[in-house]
Length: 182
Image: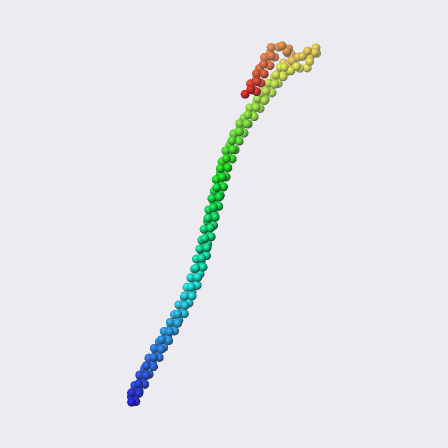
């Protein structure tokens, strides 16, 4: 019986040793599993934080996109308004340029008329002086009779009935009539 007891004791020791080894192995596996669990939990926490950051960035980008869309529409609207204003300004500029050309043309026409009228006035003044020289009496003579100028020649006088005076007066009147009648 001692032998059986010793064998049983040996078996029991073997079983205990195997149980200890198995238990040690299970404890090591448990510790590895717990370590892996902590590592996975840490990775999960990091992934959740990253996911939250990305979600936050996504929402911010979505809001920025919405804001940019609004700004784009506003800028397009402003561009359209500015284009309309530019078209109106171009139209006004074209009208002003046309009016300016018309005014310049009228100015040139008026300037030509002024020059023509000044020439007519000078001619009429000359004709008037000629007419006055032919018709106006000079200072009465010593005998009290009227004497007429011959154009400034001293000592020479024409009589009112002189034919040259009449012809000169007729020419002056014709010139005046031609200039005043269009």
